[in-house]
Image 1: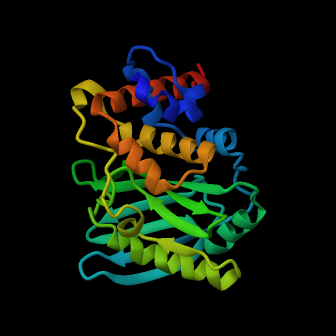
Image 2: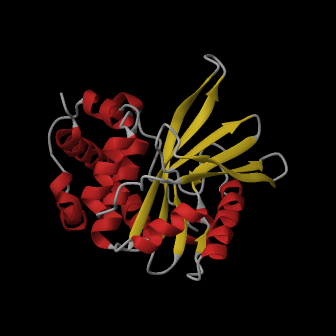
Length: 266
């Protein structure tokens, strides 16, 4: 790895294994399950597992006219655990996320600066008539500055609508409901604000070189780096974006190798 970034990546150096690229390592990280995600968050951020009882809230926005459709809180303790999940179908963007009440409980009991909600984004596959995971991002809660961010490695081009305004509509509602419960007065910060230069980390990589699934690795890497350094997300995006593409690919490979070695079980 280029010597000029050794100091920069030092906070996550324990997860970096410089070795040849193994496609099986990338395949593993793209299919990482919730149990491993919880283990990862506990390891790098001391973020405690979900409580035994929790609630999911669902929000929908119509991407044809930008209107907020609905919100409801009908799902409690779903069979499949998750922090946040997005479905895009027929012009409707739907986000299921730990409800404002559950989120408030998590934030108030946390001793860490950051809380992370990894978010799986599902798109409808017309060939199979099924939903499939097309991307991963994460929601970032800054418990010190009382800020909420949606962090997408695509920059402001939030997948799958390529415009963060629809996510902004939903997260504005979500934040308002959090503030109705708590006096902490959280503020949602749009990607148009914290990433006004539209830095993109999930670049147009050559799939024949890197394969698929790098958005998962980048998101996990960012979570790890944020937790280890406490740095500002804008500064981190700017720094990673400035890396030569070959150096950045090498960093992704090294992190994937380390993640695989740590969490893979026969």
